[in-house]
Each structure stands twice: as C-alpha cells, then as structure tokens.
Length: 192
Image (cartoon, rainbow, N blue to C red; front, side, top):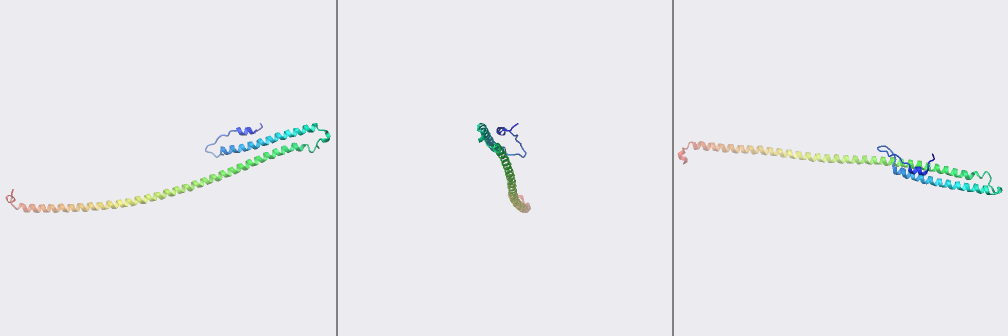
C-alpha cells in the first residue's frame, strides 16, 4: 500500500492518559509540515515526469541527427529520482531533528517545572513552619500570662477569705464580749 499525504493528514492516533507521550498539537503541526513538503515533492515529481515525457516525445519526433547522445538521455530521468530521494532524506532528517529538539525542549521544560515546584514547595513549607512557630510562641506567652493571672486571683481569693475570716472572728468575739457583759446586766436594766 502506497502512503499518500492524505493518509498522513487523516491518520488518527489514540490519546494516552497518565503515560508519557507527545503533545497532539505539536505532532499535528509537524505532520502538516511533512504533508506540505511531501506534496511539493510529489508535484515536482509529476512536473519532472511530464517534462521527461515531453522530452521523450520530442526526441521520438526529432530527426536522428538532433537526438541527444545516449549518455545524456538517462540524466533527466535520474535527476528527478535523485532530487526526490534527496528531498525525502532531507524531510526525514529535518523531521528527526525537529523531533529531537522537541523532546529536548520538553525534558528541559519538565525539569524546570519540577525544580520550580520543589522550590515553591520549600518556600511554602518554610513559611508554614515560621507561622506555626509564631503562633506557638504567641499561645505560649498567652498561656503564661493566664497562668500568672490565675495565680494572682487565687492569692487574692486566699487573702480575701483570710480577711473575711478575721473580720467575722473579730465580730463574733465582739458579739460574745458584748453578750457576756450584757448577761451580767439584769433584763430589767436593759429596759425591756
């Protein structure tokens, strides 16, 4: 089966997922370039074939004296073949070179993206650790402040309770003292 430019244009490839592969747009662009060059080569081949046929028909009708030498006759036929072969080899070399360039660019871009992502991840981790340390320090300071405040309030409560106890004990003593002194006084003297 002969391969034609239309075969290249209509060829469909399966898309791969989660595997290494080529960018479909880049492949399509490259195939379009190949088709253009291939069509040019085919048109040139057809033109040269027509020219060869024209020369052969003119040679057949021309007198024998004007006929080209036998050594010169094969040259026009060989030239298009050599030209087409050179053109095909040139296209293949160019395709291989472009392929190699795209692969190298892809690898370089991938390495750059991975490097950038690692750098960014490192920066994010460092920032998160810094914030964590700040929050931990702030909470630790607040905890110490609250513990000091609790200690102060417990001391205040203890002192307040001691003062209240002392106050009530003093009042009870006063009450007992006044009740003993009033119990020695007759009820009639109190004025009841």
